[in-house]
Length: 377
Image (tube, rainbow, N blue to C red; front, top):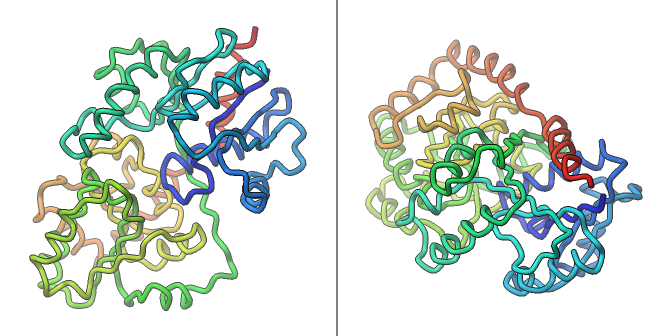
């Protein structure tokens, strides 16, 4: 079959959705030699295309083709570019995420990847313009897709709950973890580059309102009153939906201003070092679809404290330390304990190494190939 995959996010320094499609495609290239893959991207820069081909390890894969087409305009892509490509090249399956093209030829089956539906659950946490766009186009995508991929059992249940999608139309293909570390990168260089202190708590991800970062700053402010030896490092880009409350909370606690460090976006290799250097990784989100950073921290031997929400239970299992995402006292106590209790840290790390074995990109890619092959005519 001819399968087209929308990989426009790959190489753009995004988190979450970019990682998922990057890893799935990379592992598809290792296991599937029968189907023909058209990887559609909206950049035409030769050096960028060459780098992505190398990273995906498809340079010598005759059935994988990275194809620049269209422009960076997402509206034109969904109105004209994708549908025209599917029609002209007789594509059997078009695999995208969230938003599907408006005019797809009848011979092309649509598979839509849904990472989470936070925009539907927490409407007040996103911009009105984004909410209108998503709440108009996502229901259409789920309704018109031939199949939907959810990244967790929790996300599947949410799609059914909010969009009344039949359960049999949804396949759960779990995310996993692949840390791309560089053994040549010295931890001292990373520490110097980002002005990192000796001891720090780390959080990573887009700083959207649902990530609950203002709450985390308040937790740290309370902890910092008793622990002068610890800092908070926030890793991630300040994207278009940046939570402005983060600044407001920091202004309220001037005494910790120099102990809260924003790194901005970091490379995969630097991320490995940051996990390894941090004393604790925290993930206080009020809503997630999965939680890849949890598994990343586990893989680097770092204890993880997370908000007690269903997807975190699904991902972290018995290896996670759970707290109410609204209780400062719970978080403060848990962080205090895990920072100082060596036996506790050691026990958690052992459980974490078993937990991450439940997630595999190779197994997820194999499940995706099976889904594709179900549509074979």
